[in-house]
Amino acid sequence: MTKFEYTDKKDTRSGFGAGIYELGKTNPNVVALTADLAGSLKLDNFIKEFPDRFIQCGIAEANMIGVSAGLTIGGHIPFATTFANFATGRVYDQIRQSVAYSKKNVKICASHSGLTLGEDGATHQILEDLGMMKMLPNMTVINTCDYNQTKAATIAIAEYDGPVYLRFGRPVLPVFTPADQKFEIGKAWHMSEGDACSVFVTGNLVWEAVLAGEQLAAEGIEIDLINIHTIKPLDTEAVLASVKKTGCAVSVEEHNILGGLGESIAHTLTQNLPSPQEFVGTKDTFGESGTPDQLLEKYGLKAANIVDAVKRAMARK
Figure 1 (cartoon, rainbow, N blue to C red):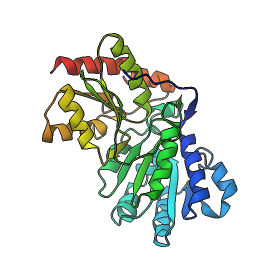
Figure 2: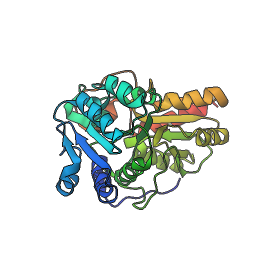
Figure 3: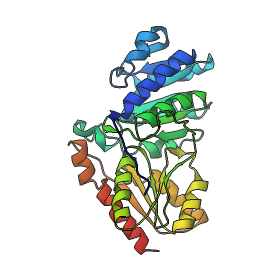
């Protein structure tokens, strides 16, 4: 198992804030919009430096999406920001009709996703957003794992022509990816080589998968660990190459196992390389109030759960 170390912990939403601030300095077409959540989305530096390229839409997310779609007609690159629940579930019709259908160059940037929103509870903890967004034609879906990767992804999507959903979060996580990385949309990151089992992981749970890999390596089990930061388009070549080597798979996500990364992996394997697969994710349920760590423990999203899933998948080979 490749050794990953970190010297700092930061929230991924701050990576977004740093990324859009850098874009503000280099790309005059970038415009930031928010639905009354500028502080939560870490837009303060952008707003201070580029006040004429910031639009406060208030608690009117549907209007924000419509304004964003309109801005693209004039050549602007709008970054529409709010909590993931409001960025998808509340405005799905507007995204479908005004952004995805007409291929508008809107970047929907969503914070506070998944269970790790914590104490705000089930009404805010969306666990369906990746599935909702990946089903929209023309939509690219990205879910990043740490501060550095989120910053790099934010910068990268400005150069990509088309609708993007970028998902990140509030919890403070280890920063373990390179600060100078080049983010490639649709290209998985092969983190560690192994032949026992392919582990495909996305978002906040990548670090848990690293810890699981270390535990398994101590038992002599070497996993093939792959960070799927782009849910759509999925790097099917990387998926198939890994499972061809290992013979089984585990998908890991802070999302409902219905409709998320795991189903995309399963679809790919079913069509090309039928193989045993285990799913680590929430099991068709809403969340509840609690600390992020308590919720990850209760809903089976910790390193120990990944270890168990790997062993189940291996037993099915």
